Amino acid sequence: MIDVVNVLGLDIGGANTKATYIKTIHGAVKEQKTALEYFPIWKDGKEQLPQVLEKLKTKLANSVALDAVGVTITAELSDAYMTKKEGINHVLDCVTEVFSDVSTFVLDVEAELLTTKDAQREPLRVASANWAATGWMVSQLIKNGVAVDVGSTTTSIVPIINGKNAATGRTDLEKLQNGELVYSGSLRTNIAAIVDTIPVKDKITRVSSELFAQSGDVHLLLNNIRQEEYTAETCDGRGKTRKEAAARLARVVCADTDMLSEQKIVAMAQYVYDKQIEQIADGLKQVHQRIEQSLQEAKVVVTGLGRNFLARKAAEKVGFKQIVDMKELVGAEAAVVSPSFGVALMVATSLEGKTVKWKQS
Image (cartoon, rainbow, N blue to C red; front, side, top):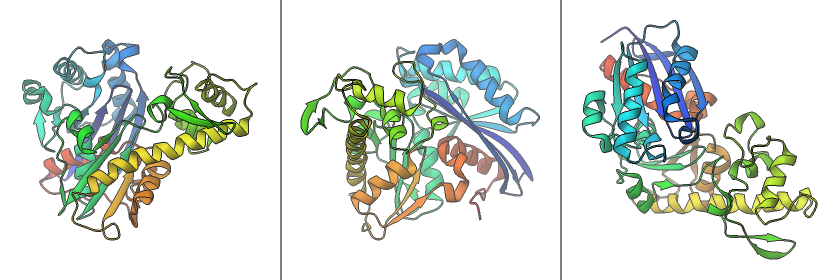
């Protein structure tokens, strides 16, 4: 067993790249730092990824001799790449370039850590596996229940049975089919992907499918998020004030702020919000059917940016009674980047030879 371990966990997505640095001493986390970089890889260019990784490395571990790096990847789905294989190989080449002198481990869909070479030999095995890090972390906390991670773009729902990650989907396709992946998130979801009609002035109104507004505008108007939490770019390239968010949402029904009052636009936002909760609740119901515990007994651990205003609300709608906020266990910042925190813990545990203690007192 190693007395002191320094690990950097990376969750490399198509829109956001998240990182967590942890220092463990005698098997317990004594220091942790997190960071997030908004990096739309399809727009800013995949050739910029090494600079993003270098920036995160400098921000979190500039003066630290890292023992290892843990990596999860979802960026391979981005249309910056023709295939997932191309995406995985490019991302791992970038990681190797930036961390050439550090042992690197890549998380796969079975919650196992692979070497970079093994991951590149079997790229689909590590594609979109960040949910496995969250599932592993939550499985250390509860015996039976569900982890619900609502990020900026998607919601991962991971069943835990007998203290084990019990997800049945291994690809995003399979997870979309079985309820473990809901393509609805806190910031980047097109309103037209949540609703096809909205009541406006007491009339059911069809919505435009143009990308006029997104879920971040809804949650900003409803005070579910602060301006600084709205890390994604806006649909029109304008700012993130209430007035600008209201203008974007009005445009979804081909109106504007001259035609609709703020009160009516906020009512639209509330309607969309309720429907988004229903989307996540539907996935949660489907997953809960596989857990042999009642809604009263099974626990739900909520994490991600939308853990309280989406994950918790969806769990309450389904009828779960025991809901735990990951923030209380790892702190607010780490709860927003739980896959990077989780993979860092998994790597530290592997190096330590025993499960690292990480729950906050």
